[in-house]
Amino acid sequence: MRKKKETPDSVEKESVNEKKEECTTPSGETSEQPQDENEKKSGLTEEDFMKILAESQDRYLRLSAEFDNYRKRTLREKMELSKTAGEEILAGFLPLMDDFDRAQKAMHESADVNAILEGIDLIHKKMSEFLSRKGVKEIPAMGESFNTDLHEAVTTIPAPDKSLKGKVADVIQKGYTLHEKVIRFAKVVIGE
Image (cartoon, rainbow, N blue to C red; front, side):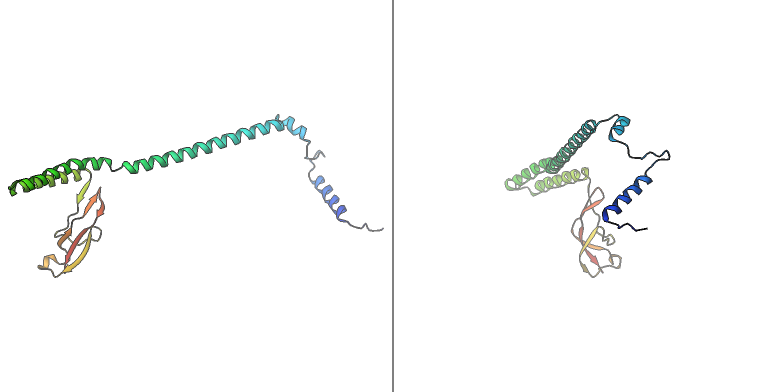
């Protein structure tokens, strides 16, 4: 027997034939079915598939555009909110500004120092009440133990009394919290 010369074409044909044999069903039929039979089984033609694909793409584009519009709208609303967020607080300060204007006018026209002091004390009280209504509270500092979460040490001095050692001996600038969050630390002097 003479051996056949193997050419790339003959090897390819043999591998294709082997694959066809592997794909046969127990009854001897191949698993490949004509396209017409597939169309008959699913009941859809290529045109139907194209229509479904076009509808899906259209829905996707519309949903994408809707989401993009939603994102832009919420971004615009956030920007507007940030611009007008302090409006209520600033409107609350306007009556206090009016009181300061009246006090300043009274200081220039009046010689009664006690009346001016009383007016300024009233303005201070009104401002403190306004801030407390908005959730702003003063951080207690004088005589308290030094707390790095609430106080900022500016300097230290020798404690005039042993009871002030490690405690706040003087307050340079008051600190404040807004709803339990520190918005300004109290600047203090610590006794050593």
